[in-house]
Length: 566
Image 1 (cartoon, rainbow, N blue to C red):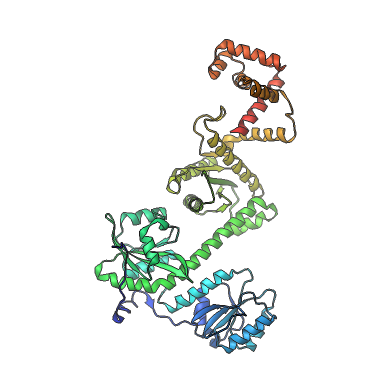
Image 2 (image 1 turned 90 degrees about the horizontal axis):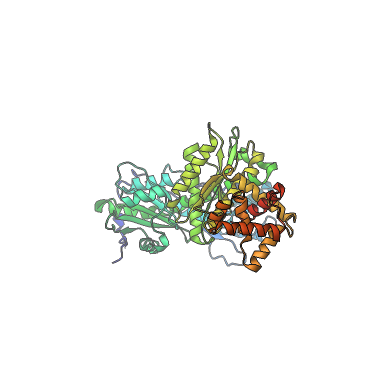
């Protein structure tokens, strides 16, 4: 038997359960004004009149001038690709007005509002003007969801897109704790009403904001997604039963709502209420997704401007509301994965962004973090008596919690404190240099003599400032051709050709200041062997190891070469 059981078709008397009005649900008539309010898409009404705003709305239609119109009565028409003044535009308004369309949504694309208003008045038609940069796909989804949401019972007092408030309203109506989950298994919102029973699974998922099993691999989720309406999911051995509903808008799966089963006496009413919430739930989830996507993109764009576009950095700082009085440091975070680009890697890097944002919010009361490329960045204030100690504790805490988001290790670094926004590019560069150095140390741990033991996972820039500066010297040597065919190059060639170990001998000589016993222990050979090799080094390669400048140059070459190899 399936673990998820669809709700039997209710009798007519069950369609309007008593007490629904008291629970905050009410029947709403669909008018154009209702749809415009629910879409919240920055639409400008070219000719608002009581008659236009009160026009009934039944559906949404994408306009194609080549299509045959069977009926467009009471529909909102989206005029994709039509511009003011074109034959298609005039034909569309004429046909829409004659067919009693509810409204036409257009983009101005340079047309003046007076021109659009005049055309709308001439045809006695509602014309809604969308921003030129608006996404038609999003507008279609919002329009269709708004029509369904306005036609459905609505939860009063809930701001569109506030999924935590919506979950509380759903929990109140159904008498069971509610969670809202996206198709990737992320918890988008959950109810916080006191007194409603929950189980251990609910505790874990609300703490981690993630389902324990991905929906794509969970049989219960698959059954819920396949069901036409709300279903009962029987209790597992150690948990509680749930009522669940797949939420869609325009055919797109947005996620699902899960309610702790309120018990046999209240179950039928709760399932009916859950079914009736579906359209409005889709509208809330669409708005939440749009707001989240916009917020993440805006943060990423502004933080990228801060770090890459110095002339506009002050503007970006003002938009973010940054307090730069005590300086800022850029922190960088990355997950060490053998492969990137998979769905799981994308999910994990977004979880890391959430973790960084949460920790920074707890510590500073605010967070300025963003995912740029495959690296999560955060701006850490330089507040307190010991800001660097605080920065170190923050990245250590994030690393300590990283096992909750990925089975792969997380690397976390912080650049130096930037006194002003113009210094943030330097702080970011330092954070990235340190990050890449730790990644290289981890990759080369145990493979070279320069990378022994376990590589650290967190670091401040100053923790590795010397090796990072030496790496820059090594890059300078290579880029300017200063090495040429010097002694190190000749020793490397000899070792490769004759299978000798002269470079290791020189490395040990420089590391132990010529101490023969220490060199022998390091190289695992007899003292006399070390003496012989040093003598041959000096003779065969004309090395004056007593010359301090010669030793400095050889040490720089060997050290920078080893650091670059890690």
